[in-house]
Length: 150
Image (cartoon, rainbow, N blue to C red; front, side):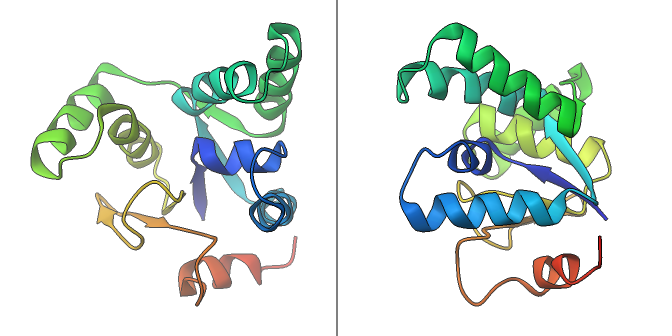
């Protein structure tokens, strides 16, 4: 199953946030290492901004973190088709454009799940279900995915 990760998952895995979310994100990333994980390029740009802004890391440190994520998982570029779909999402579902673009790129790349806490949990669009990995009970889709041996 293909899974896309939103910026907040990456930021927590980088240690930005409360201990529970950070440890959960780290475990999640470790467990997903054997799966087909997609990082929309938008998430890496946002991560760089968060690392240099909120975390006060140098541009060099942020670059290294972003490149490390890109070395670990597939990066999916934003296409014009995805951007047009994102515009529709802003109108039809009142999503912020950059969140909508992440969802559209996940759909374009045949992801089944988008892990994020920035959307309505269980929101499904074009076959992609948004799952907040920090809420209980855990989504059956995510629980099933994490029970697959790596």
